[in-house]
Figure 1 (spheres, rainbow, N blue to C red):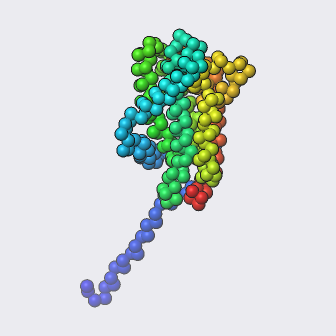
Figure 2: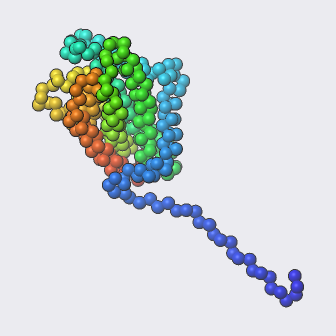
Figure 3: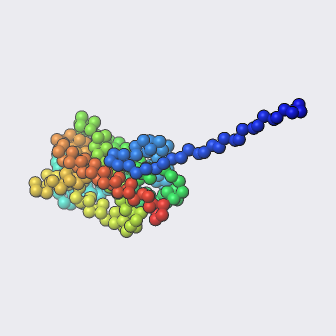
Length: 290
C-alpha cells in the first residue's frame, strides 16, 4: 500500500434478526386457524400415522382388530337383543345382524374418536410443553385411527349385506356426508373434552361413563319407531342420533329422515363452535398444567 493512502474502511457486519411470529387472539371462524393448521399439515399427518401404528403395533391380529371389534359387538347385541328380546322380528324383513352392524359401525368410530381426543393433549404433554404448533392438531389427529377402522369396517358391512341377502341401495353415496356429520360431532365434543381433561383429570373417568349413557340414548340397537313420538325429538338433538339413523337407512335402502339428520348435524356444528371456543381460551394454560 502506498504511503499516504488511507485504507478503505470495512463496513460493519449487518445483523440478521430471526423472523418473529406474533400470535394474536382470533375471533369467530378464525378460531379454527385453518390456514395455520394447513401449514402444519405434515405434523397432523405424522401424529395421525403414529397413532395408527401404535394402535396395532405388536398386536397378533394387527389390523384384524378393526374387523373383529364391530363384528363381535354386533354379534353379542344380535344374540341378546335380536334373539332373546325379539328385536329381530321388529326390524323384519331386514336381517337384525345387518341392522345392528349398520348402527355399531358409526357409533364405534364416534366412541373411539371421542375417547382418544379427550385424552390427547395430556397424552402428548411432552411436545405440548416444548414446541409451538396449533394445539388443535392434537385432538384432530386423534380421530385418524378410528376413521381408518371405520373404513375397514364399512367393507365388512358391505360384505355382510351380500352374504345375508340385504340389497345395496343408491343411498350409499350419501355415506361420506353422514360420516362428515359424525366427525363434526367428534371434533366438537372431543376438542371440548380435551381442554377440560387438562384442567380436570376426573374427565378421564367421566368420559367412558358419559359415552355409555349416550349409547343407550342413540338408536344403535333399536329402531327409532319403537320410541313414542314425544321422545323422538331427543334422538334428533343427540349429535349423532339422527345421523346414525340416517346412516342405517342409507345402508338398508329405507327412507331417510333428513330432518333428524339435519338437526343432529346442526347440533354437532354447535358443539364444534363451543368446543373450539373453549379450547382456544384454555390452551394458553396447557403448558403450565398439562
